[in-house]
Length: 319
Image (cartoon, rainbow, N blue to C red):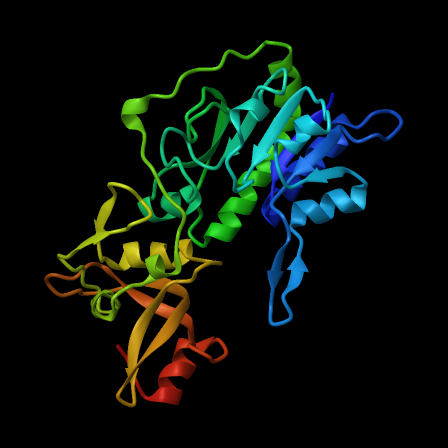
């Protein structure tokens, strides 16, 4: 079994480890012939190069690495199958066709729901069923036929970080048993239902903004009548309710982190909302829900994180 892995971030490393251990030869040769990952980028004040976690993993294992997918063809890297997991770049069709069995993509949503680059955040916000789809890559975004799907749950305390880590870890376990059957032709791919497709795009820092007036309302258990259109979730709208804002805060962790503006000493300052919870309201008033939004920890621009209680006491302010 020979594989090429396309991936970049730390949360896909468990997939690599499962494949490495499952299919290594009797002589301890890794099944991973090469990895394709994003090139190192300069970071920090000194602009030192930062290598991706997949790059570092390959270096430690003595496995070939490439930053351009077409270099696989130029260097005659041959493998049975490609595995794609959050690589972050478009793979040319000639590279897809380079593999006898194509490329399988691990996508953290139950496709055709939430195609695109932010499906985990979308699942937390929308309260949709969580899960993973393993699909065969074609020439369109997250469009190819489905090989396998499994369901999971969005836990009450889940953030994008915890849910994504759990989904990719399970994906590695499932792929390790799925690949032999797939290569043997024992799995029949099925087409996606295009009429049910929903889409996401890459999240930007400004997408994490919540207007302060809606936070104030949610902290009192009120839902605003204003429509909340989240730009990174196509055709999805909601209201600024306590539960939706709480879910949004969870979805924005660990990046870019939900934020708003707060007025302190006649200045509007940016404040990050690191963690929140929902608190029941007894004998709630008309036009309010039975729960309110409560902050646990926040971080004022340029300052260290503190509890919400410490923040209110230190700055004598509230929304």
